[in-house]
Amino acid sequence: MTCTAVGDTIPDGTLSYADEDDQILNVSVHSLAACKQVILVGVPGAFTPTCSLKHVPGFIEKAEELKSKGIINDPYVMKAWAKSYPENKHVKFFSDSSAAYIKTLGLDLDVSDRGFGVRSQRFALLIDDLKVKVVNVESGGQFKVSSAEDMLKSL
Image (cartoon, rainbow, N blue to C red):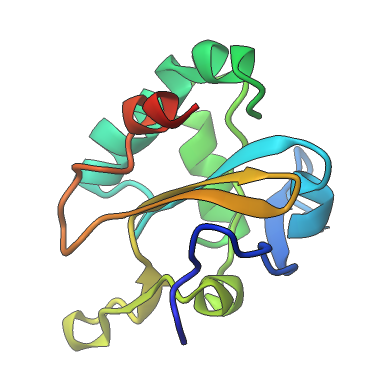
């Protein structure tokens, strides 16, 4: 599958999250992104060092600044990961536990040879009313182009 590119319409798909009662709820990507700007961030794994210590904290720290510019693993793990950031008031954590949506975006990463199965590549997409405006995808285990600061530069 070809990687999602600038100018593409973001495909619809289903993401999940666990509510306060641990019920799994599904939401369509189009319902999240229609008629607004959103940043969709992909990480290879919750609680991994780069994701937990660098990638996600930057988006939480810069959430107000991103919001001022018009921006807003499995569901249980994502819920637990979200709770590990008590200062977070704006960043929502969704799961694509089967990697179906990530595969649709062409942003999947097969690390089965290391026992981890199919994961998301590390990335950040800027979407404006379903249109992809920015695609920042990391290579390998790098963290150089998908930070909150990188997205702020694009706004």
